[in-house]
Image (cartoon, rainbow, N blue to C red; front, side, top):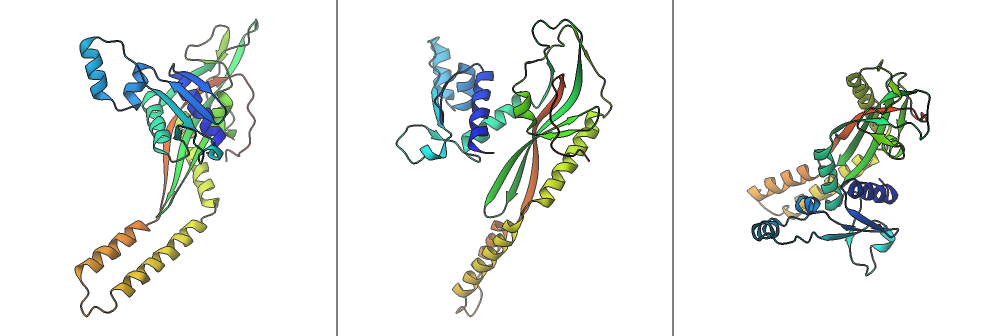
Length: 269
């Protein structure tokens, strides 16, 4: 997830949560609502006091820097990158607020003929490669539930469309041919294939660092006539530190009934 997508995600998150956002390129300044302040800022005593005396609340203002070129400067604000605590906090809130949605694309203004809407399943996933170091990647996949066509970058694409939770007037939506549960399985299989075909040199590099640290540990205790208990505990800690894991987390998803044509850029299998 590069800085442009992080920037767009943060801006959309706060705008959809009715917070005022000032976008200055690589920097976002957000005036939180009371609800978002309570959810994000960890100020229970402040809110308890304000509400007990009936005073006018003053929600916090957040400044976030998303452009890495500005991280080393004197600009005030939180440095946001993929893996930063604040970004993961926003992911968690998004997951809590909308793990599943069902949205419909509105016809263009002035449209008189009935518009046919095609069902799509969208799924946002996070893939984490973990050892002593961690690498995370975000995938947004969409599948056409009529023909199985799959696109990557689904969420940024539908973000540009005019969507609503209510079925728009003068529209007809097609019943899906591919059941959403089957589509989820297909997308998971596709993601598994992407993971298998990825560059996994990091595993070998982690194994080399593990061997190096174990050698250092053995060298440190080489002169001991009897191996102390601390040796085994330290060795176990090294083994746990370099244990390799690959995990996939579904962040959220939903059904989208669209009349816009979306470009297929991955095979649905």
